[in-house]
Image (cartoon, rainbow, N blue to C red; front, side, top):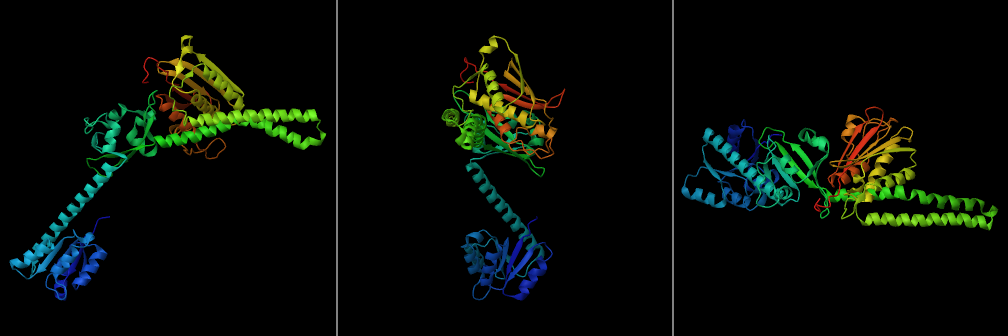
Length: 489
């Protein structure tokens, strides 16, 4: 809404008030009147006027004293004061300046002069306020831990606060003003999801965008979420960009996902013999021989020991804090086959066909990712294939091949197709898709976003698309190979 300037008119003479009301009544101001100094101070504090027209000659408290008191009130110290006086002597003006008056207008008023001076001082006051607000805004932005940038129509940086410069330059000597934001970001980060970044300015308001500094054997991954606001008017500043550090958020989410995954996959099997054995003894205790009791107790005891071992493994995983904090952990390509067999058994999957397309030399490949992380990724993808299959019994094809970018795992099932919107958001945490095959709204959950985060921050790739020849989904992930000759990878 357009701001309406408030003009406080202070005059003990009703004719003077009426005169000013007539002269200024059609100028678009909100006119407020006070008949004496004390009333003027009260209304000024209450209304915060944009300008005060103050008569000097008033009983009890004259205009000089009113102005002096106004200047001692912090919230009113900068409100423009125009003194109205029939006094033309030099001493009165000097006294007015001394107590803080901004302008003087002599009675009787010249209508054009009065209106012109009032408009000028209001414009100057507005400009002064804008400068003050701009200074406060710049101070807050510069001291803020968040990174902010302004881009022009050509997506070039025209402003960047200190934190943004830290994220986007290597040293204090570099200047990023005038540089293309996306090109500059790509020199330091991996842009994810890649298909969204292809049209990032048009799609960004609806999806999450990330800049990922990939993990190396000497440093952890670093995540920035990119938020974009398009300016509503045609000005030089076309886009406001915020870079938000979400590294800790990703870590916490992964710890949660890791714990859930380990509980789901590791504890289900050993719990069954414990509960079944003890339940059988409880229900048939009087009819069992001592030898039979011992056998069932041995089964339950064996299950308890297995449960203890699995719990200790979970704690070991959690002690690592998250599976992408790899350090020097690696996974041999042949370990993937063993992990698939373990997961197949735990999830009770009926059919998994594996197609290996790599030569003997490739069998010596070590992947730059821990076995725990690979297990979590495969478990999540295979569980989804089962969960989203109409009968929970998918036929899964896994193709393992070595390509120039690394080791490619292509996992396809014969479940259901996803809509274009679902595929667009498949790596977004807790995205609510339209409907699943049962007609119910289905959430993507946390798992697939964690799969993506694990892969992206080690420099890998992941994508999802519908099967072309049949119903079902294809997930393709590429895991980078550990380069022993380049330890900074």
